Length: 381
Image (cartoon, rainbow, N blue to C red; front, side, top):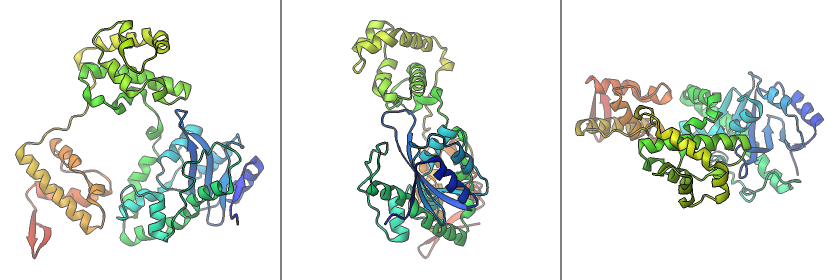
């Protein structure tokens, strides 16, 4: 028996928004496709209040401005699981990120339930319910959607509204609710969802194989690809693959005919964009060395500092054990090494730092030491 409302008419949506406008919190999820586009194409919005479950069809309702305005109500908390992609969609369509928000995946990690825990695993862990996964490959843009597809979709908020109060209670009981403030604030920063073509080279597969001057070429070409992908709303790989970009950055000569030797470039592409690419390559190669980009290299610690890093990782593991969270969630070896090479004693300014910053400072200043007694480890002045 269907226990949710399928909303595909503006008057239905307006009626629901009016009814739910005083909700203290709502649970949200989306279904989308992006195989053939740069930006994800929103196909379904699932929403739950304490009293109602609804599926909103954005392919039938063309004007969602009222919904996005309703979503910005500051007194209403928006609950997501793994919120980033949902927030990216809402920001792309409305220019705003819904806030305030709560991400159950981050909350679960803070409570020691698991890093990057999937929704189905979390439902099973907290509610003992195994979710149906048969519709995971659904084409959500096709209409009409079947009852099975809609039931699968609504489950994403049906149980999310049950999980949120349980997680909130555990966070309050353990004194960890405020640990989430900074991670959630970062999720609402619009810069998280604004593509920057000029930095897109950093995410190209194979970038670590290039030298600094070649990276300058890659930066120009990747920025061109990203900009064109955004303009045409096409997947960037449809324009040029990462492998082709890297091969172009390695080109020793600067002639149009050299492109034909690169596997994956068609004659049509070369005829259309070849001169433009040559211009970008020559422009990059003419830059002075100080203008070349460089990948952040992990500085190798000397033997003494490496031992210090080992010691601080003991602190990380001890604190993770004491608070029943994974050490990987608290800090990685690479983060510790970066902190030491930069001459810092503070890991971060969020909840992770609150667990280790003071201990790090005391140990690094010689005011505290690690002691083992009766096969138990402690940190003492």
